[in-house]
Image (tube, rainbow, N blue to C red; front, top):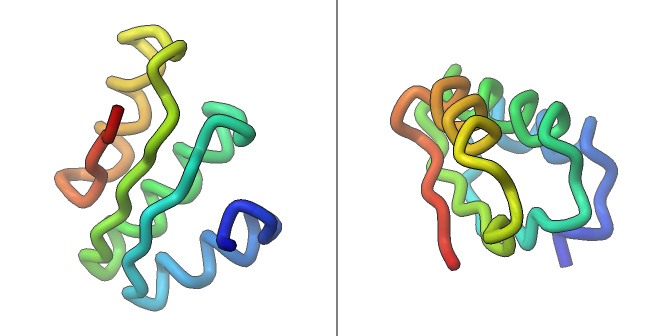
Length: 74
């Protein structure tokens, strides 16, 4: 389960080009922005699930950091 990994580990995986699906409900918006930004460096595809309670502004921030590499799922 990737959810149990530390944010720094998820950033490293994404920066290396590894794509994954993450139940992101337990991560802060700032952590998700870091992960998304790392994914954008090598084009890793990241799916963030469980963000239904986040504001539109938060999702826009995360999406902008991901530069097309981030997908939101229910």
